[in-house]
Image (cartoon, rainbow, N blue to C red; front, side, top):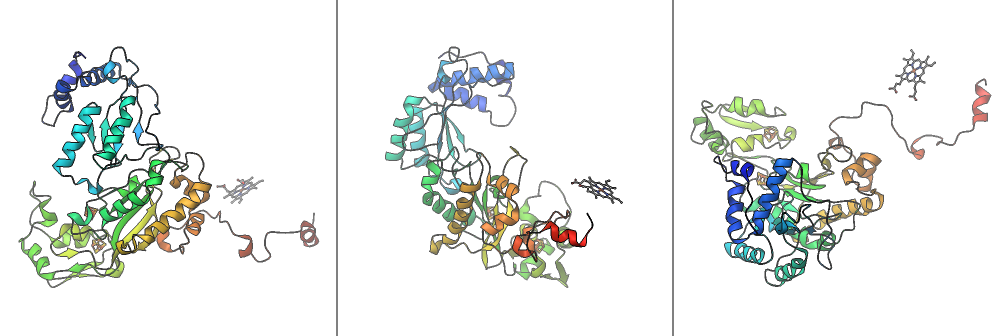
Length: 426
Ligand code: HEM
Ligand code: SF4
Ligand code: SF4
């Protein structure tokens, strides 16, 4: 496959950021189909339109998803990308790798694919970009037999779960996000590989409300670590911050002179619930008013830690705008113990309550967040068998269009107009 002229893409080799064009050119030296991906992309830059055909349905036997088929609309001009299917590999939780495994993956992909990857897809998968249909089964065979790895999810199913790095490298993690992510991935292999849902469904888990995997925004089922006792405090370390022994926020703002650390200005006055104060040089927190926003802990990581009675909040229904508007996940279960000892039984119970309902009630291509909007939060919470509490809403409704059940109204809904006419003129 010959090189193509790429004057527009060549511009993107300038500047300090690692250039994907430079990388692709280097890859093309051993994988000539990469010249065609550059050529087709250049054409798209020129025409300002994509040159991939609509859709593409390919895969491996036994599975209903995992591979995104794609064909060039200019295969004569760019034969190297006539087929350019994307393979999703299920990544290890939090994406820790050894070089041996990465080398195995690269060798596999050099053999069967373009050599191009995406490390990683937004959902979490390790994405292998560009191969042909006949290569899919042999690739899958080697992947499973030699690398002991599996495909990720695609389609109307459970997609590949992902988590923050949790207890592996973070002092704030209130749950073992990796253990939970791995366990649920293994437990729900069937739901990942064989679409059985009205639409896609995603799990994400973060160890604390900083939510480094953005579970609240990017997953239908978000598990977000928290605690319900008191913030653990080290008063000596608080003094250390006040004296300037430790940099605020772990030194995150060191690039600019923000003046000497001022605990009142930077912590107390910024606490969203105003539940902190100083008594002399002792920091005090009224934990009953703390919403666990993480701000004070983020500013003084050496002095403050999440409490010891840890668990997670379950939020449901986040989605992107299509069809009826973007949604963040809505708080469903304020606190749930996340227990690896029981193989996360409690979490699984919650998931299955949602699925049992949504798989029946959800319309075709309706995300669970939209189903909740359509049938209403009260109905959803009833399905979830949780007590409805003030924490379920940010504010009570302002319109008076309130539904009542028949049995909640004295006399019910059956009325006789003749009876009414006896007291009121026609
Ligand atoms: C002081 C007098 C009135 C007040 C304060 C009043 C107020 C309202 C309000 C607040 C609504 C609801 C608007 C909404 O849906 O957001 C409404 C709807 C309506 N009003 Fe009135 N109204 C008055 C007089 C009248 C009169 C005299 C008529 C007819 C002759 C009338 C006919 C209607 C109708 C047909 C609706 C629409 C009902 C629906 O959407 O189902 N209103 N009114
Ligand atoms: S979400 Fe919280 S626990 Fe997880 S890595 Fe981020 S700060 Fe740490
Ligand atoms: S976690 Fe947030 S709400 Fe709680 S005390 Fe700290 S700043 Fe205030």
